[in-house]
Every structure is written in structure tokens, then in C-alpha cells.
Length: 252
Image (cartoon, rainbow, N blue to C red):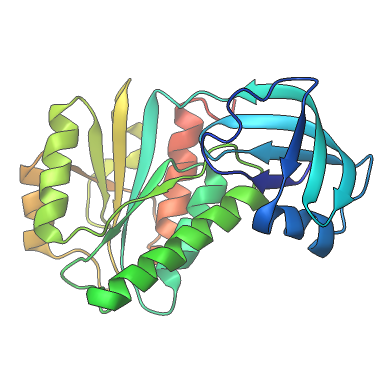
């Protein structure tokens, strides 16, 4: 069974090598020692969310945290092609369900998208609170799936912002794939970049409007069909990402 993962802040594992000891303190230390009751001799991994993983064994538990004896250090490189889920805001927490599963599948970043047909609207204080909730969801899903890299949660984009993002990604050699039920090109055979970003754009419950789709395609995106069935906004992205991860050799 794989070891449980606990998160340290980026940069805090720099210089920690095999044979050293590391004190897991703060919220994560309390979670490991008090909530999960991890004890001496148990295997744990400590990751920094940016690719560094310490393979360790609990040495001692105290009020200061959990002392970990480091038995190995692994640096997991960033993939050549970054999978980025552009998830339209949706009601009933379906957008959060999408990014949770996408994180477990292996997405590298998520982008909240205020689509024209999104019922949910992020503005002002609500935008900040909602993004913070997404950050928490992604962080928890990364720990659950034992990831060393925590996906970035970007600032929400509106329709114009997404068009600009698509144009920039395509110009840099990446790709933007818009899931659409009327598309003729199947995702399974769509061309993928060798480096850069691959955006996967998922619309809200009401779908992506024709004008909205047209502007994205004009900016360089490609409309693709996921399969024979129409999936919910909460499941379309994770399914598409799983297919792309397989094609990119991540699950080999």
C-alpha cells in the first residue's frame, strides 16, 4: 500500500536529502500526528507540491509535529505537455467535482471560466472565496491521489480572457481542445502538441454557445467530440483528461 502524503510549502524541502530528518509541523504535522495518529515506524511521504517527494519513516511524534527520517528523495519532473482543464463555472458544486476528479487523473492546472451560459457568477468577495474553495479541493485531491505536484488554480477568465488565452497557447505551439457534442473530430485522434500546454475546455450545463465556440475556434481552438454520449460538466473534463493522459504516455 502506498504511503500517505503530507504537504509542505514549496521550497521548504530544498536541501533535505536522504539520511536527514525533517520536522513536519503546522497543520499538516497536527493532521499526521493527532488526527491520523501516525506513529514511529510508519511510512509517510512529504511533498512540496512542486515535484519534490521525501520518502520517510516516522521517528517521533510530539507537540511540535512529526519527526520524519528521510530514506529517499525523489524529484518528479514536470511533463513536457501540461494538461490544463478550463472548467466552466457550474451550479451544485459540479465544477468542484470536476476539478477534484481531474486532479486525481493528473491535470496540471485548472482555470475557472465564466462562460456565457454559466448560471454561477464569480464577482468580488464571492470570487475570492470560491477560488479559495477550489484551491482547497485541489490540494485535498492531490494528497488523496498521492501526487507530488499540486495543480495550479488560476484566476477566473471571462469569455474574452479565454479567447486571448487560447490564442496565446496556440501561438506558442500548444493546443486548445473544446469539448462539443456536435464536433466531427474525435478527441481520441485529435493532434496533440509535443511541448507546451494542452487546454481542455468544458462548458457549463447549458453548453457552449455557437458564437462563443466560433470565437474560440477563430482564435485557434479545435472543437472535438468526446464520445457517443453527452456527459455532465462534472464528468466530461476528467474523462477527456484520462484519455489524453493515456495518449501522452502518462499511464504507461
